[in-house]
Length: 202
Ligand SMILES: N[C@@H](CCC(=O)N[C@@H](CS)C(=O)NCC(=O)O)C(=O)O
Image 1 (cartoon, rainbow, N blue to C red):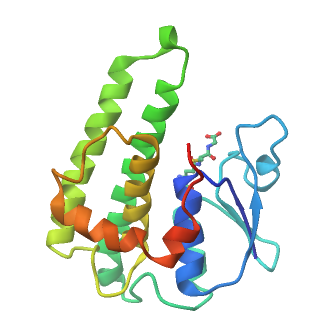
Image 2: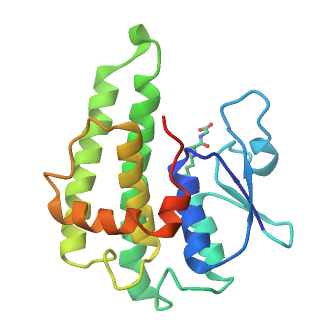
């Protein structure tokens, strides 16, 4: 199995962590989709990472589909087998990925030339992040698809979203306003799978 990923992508980190937690061997092909010489479109027509090349040659994207595919390979289960139990976990995954989407969109906007930036777009995305964090905290307190005894794909996606905020939005204060999430994230981000996939310094 080969994972096409950039080292800073929070979605790729989600899959690297999932592979590590499941104990599935893979090779990592580092590719930055923004570079002119990128080969990512050879794997994913959308030109995005992560993409996973399975042993049978099939290529899977995006990260929720890859995570679903990995469940079919065995190893530690990251999603309950029963559909009604799996749904809240998938909801947490979608929420966490959505926080990441908002953070990536804001980061890209903030890196446009100053005169082309839209403060309204940035504000809109930051508001999504804050609403998303409040909902993540509530789901954690209620143990609703988050914070179970063994990490699932919802936990992994959530910790990757929080790790991305730390990486790109160090100025965004979220720990003091979401103390339960902060304590939980400290444990998650200390797991060997997260330490091994931490983004290089900005
Ligand atoms: N929904 C996708 C998002 C993937 C994504 O947006 N990846 C970014 C890197 S963080 C990317 O490859 N962007 C390149 C582009 O948009 O052209 C997933 O969950 O895999």
